[in-house]
Image 1: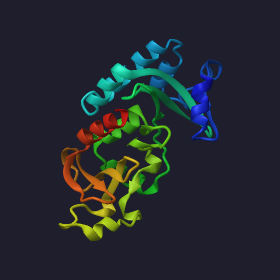
Image 2: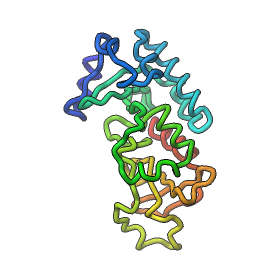
Image 3: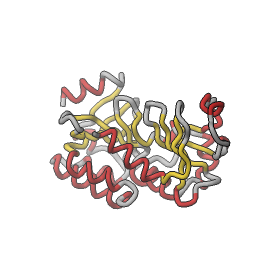
Image 4: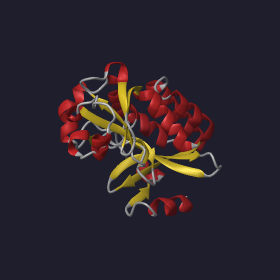
Length: 231
């Protein structure tokens, strides 16, 4: 546990591992009942099994490849606290045999992103399902990227200046004023939803230095990119 904490502290100044004494005092106001039931377990294998049950309950189809990878390579689950905010820490065996840490935020209906809050009802139900029932983002701990970002960090396209727009080879097919990116690769790649044109979870693969790819399936891309991050 000390080695794990030392690694986490390299990237976050105020991060803490939460131990059993504090976990036992937590309420559902702080951590949802599903995750309380996981982290109160003492056995790592049981925590992993209960975690996978939650994923299968809510995203068994949308993130089937991610779940398959976690079934083989999820080693442990911990509760961490960063500046008073709780989240779930995943210890995942990755492609080179080492262990990487992924973070899943506790679902929170009261998030600080005014532009997104104003249109939350227009966001596809499958995306709301993930954020409201499973995690407020799921991403590589060290970079806070290569995953679904917390709602507070969802990119509103109209807030940014995209130099790639000047280089587009065809007319822009999304409206920046109604487009949000929920996935950030950390290397200039985004998976974005234009809520006025997102039937069947239609998404845009947006790049800071490449031509965008339209009419992608949001979950197919997210599922593939998360697994690529693992591997």
